[in-house]
Image (cartoon, rainbow, N blue to C red):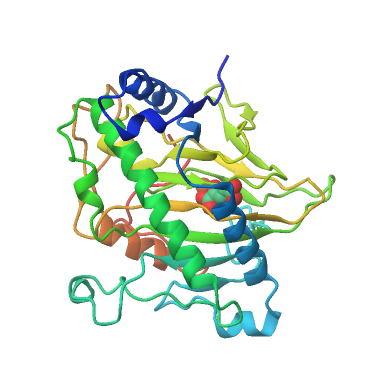
Length: 324
Ligand SMILES: O=C(O)CCC(=O)C(=O)O
Ligand SMILES: [Fe+2]
């Protein structure tokens, strides 16, 4: 029976904690089997999460015309993503039923790193929701800490030198998408988000109590993660799968919002620094054979190929596909 476990990660804050090793083992079991886990004991309060969800609601309540003034452009993949913008890459042409708002690791216009990688920069913050910046950046920094605790546990669990993964996340290309999924009627086909794998290292989501996230099991079925109130859902993305030589699993998932209610979500996608080249740090498992990925190039290609009239070419990293 495959299931998504709920793990109290509080012992991971201290490697001398009597339950440290056992908790690392539980995290490793989840990440090497289903690739998803629910976590509690993060230290991030329900109040913090509720504040972010209210902010996200307020962002999508902005007048439609004003959204277009603050929309993503080819040059700057920040701001509103209109409803219907993302169609699946399977040729079916059915657009996902959500609108989004894209944010990246926030740095000033004069930050030196912009000389090395122009994808870094300040976010567009929605003018109509003045608290959005503080509320979201506060949440972001808390999730940075949670991500680091999880990465440290994975370093231990994989037998890697301490900090080998964490060192890749200084000046990260970590990003968030604020998401609004209108309800889908029971007879409506299509998805809130079509089945996909995440291309990042690690994703952390505070699930909306209305539900709708579904995770594929190895036998092709779909299960719904249980997550206690105040918990988060974590999943392994393609980059950690690649780093681990195929041991940690990046698992397809999708969203279908049949709750009859509006659904709001704000995944945090943990991505290394622009100059990190992700390649196996351990001998790959038999049959696992993937090219390395340069994170800056990867990010530039995501920005480019999400545009409906742009196609992947033979330099586009192979990430996020469901082919294997
Ligand atoms: O909204 C969710 O729960 C999941 C979103 C997701 O899978 C994604 O944005 O990659
Ligand atoms: Fe995803």
